[in-house]
Image (tube, rainbow, N blue to C red; front, side, top):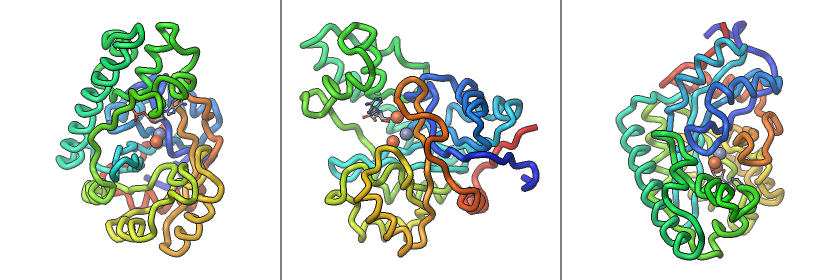
Length: 290
Ligand code: AMP
Ligand code: FE
Ligand code: FE
Ligand code: ZN
């Protein structure tokens, strides 16, 4: 816990491992982060904390600080909103129940999407399962990997631009809680919530100020405004709102290993914001190197 044990170096608070849709195991991910010269990395798999213990062990020996986290799926109508959650209690009953519900819904949804794709293309549910890890969070990236394995796309990105794009007609949403409920759950579990890539949809579709204000009242800590998918105009609008509501601003890579072009440390968070985040986190501890 002592400040002097904290590693110096760039801070990247959003990465994925094979527990969800990253291509590296939690320990490979942590070692890659150390090799990239980062001082602090957060593991933030979708709707799962299953990578925390392996990542913690790897961080101690790799000489990097680990912030345990998760990217919580939430939804308002047709709009998917991702909520980064840090330093919460992974055994909190509310979080455990809600994330189990989401993972189950993701699995059913993926199976239904694959059934519909399989009617038109050479793709089976077993092909997709072969791309997942046991107990991991299943998503469209695993369907993409199966499409690549079957020669129906060259890369994940090509699959997303084609068969998996909502316009192709196979897309289906899955259950996810309202972000207001997710923010409250994260705070109740001692965690610190930050909206992931909040400016990806252009300035006309930026979250309504009234909704943001309600999330702030529920305990929202910050906005991930430095992220490659955020659009400049929407980011400018949200930067103003962050100032108005006293929200912290974070930056991160959203690294998925070879699953996405995003590189570790391509966007970073300031040490001051990390200090505040650690000070507010009460459900679990950062892992400092030995
Ligand atoms: P899902 O949550 O199952 O709908 O899948 C969305 C996930 O796919 C997000 O977490 C993204 O990180 C990932 N994703 C979206 N677009 C791409 C892409 N072009 N290449 C690789 N992964 C992507
Ligand atoms: Fe992802
Ligand atoms: Fe996301
Ligand atoms: Zn992510």
